[in-house]
Length: 256
Image (cartoon, rainbow, N blue to C red; front, side, top):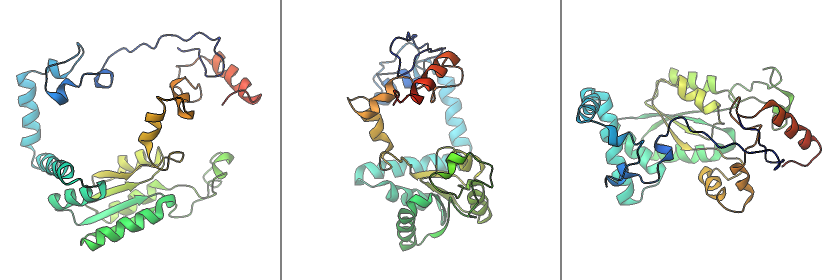
C-alpha cells in the first residue's frame, strides 16, 4: 500500500513492487527487432517450438481467425507503404474482409466528425448505420446518477441502446468514435460485430490521447501524473489515512 499523495512530500513514498514483469516493463523490444535481446522475464524467449506450432494451428486452423489476421496484416503493410490515415485503413480492412454494412457508435461531441466519416464511407459504397451516445435522451437525474454528472449536460450517455440498435441492424463492423471511458468498454463487451476505434475522446488534449503521455515526461502540467493521486489510485493502493489527508488539503485549496 502506498501512503503518498501529490500534496504532501513529507509522506514517505514506498517503492512500487511489480509481482510479475511483462512486455510493458521491457526496454529492448527484442521480439519486434528480432535481434535476440530479451530480458530475463521475456515471454518470447520462453516460447517453445511447440508453442509456435500451437499458435499457428490456432490462427490457421480457424477460417475466420485467419481471415482477420491476413486482412489486418495486408492493411497494415499498405498503410505504411502508402501513408494511409486510419480512416483509409479502416476502409481497406472492410474491403478485404467483405464488410459492407458499417455501424458507428459516436459521442455527440464528435457528431460532425461522424458525419464526415459517414460521407466518406458512403462515397465508397458502404452502408452506414450510426447512433449517438445521447440517443433516447435519458436524463442523468432519472438514472439516479450523482448530481455532479449533470454539470456538463442533463442527458445521460446510452451505450446500451447504441449497441442494441447496431446489433439489431446486423452490422459487419462497428466503429467507435469518442465514447467516454467506460461507455466504450461496455459497448465493446456487448457488440455482436467486431469493433475498431477510429477516434478516442480526450477532453483535455483535443482527442490526441498520446500527447498527454509525451507531456508527462516534461516539465508540463501533465507531469502531475508521475506522482500518485490518491483519487485515481487502484483500490487499496493508497492508505485511508493518506486519502483523508489529501482530501482535507484539497478542501483547503492546496491540492491541484
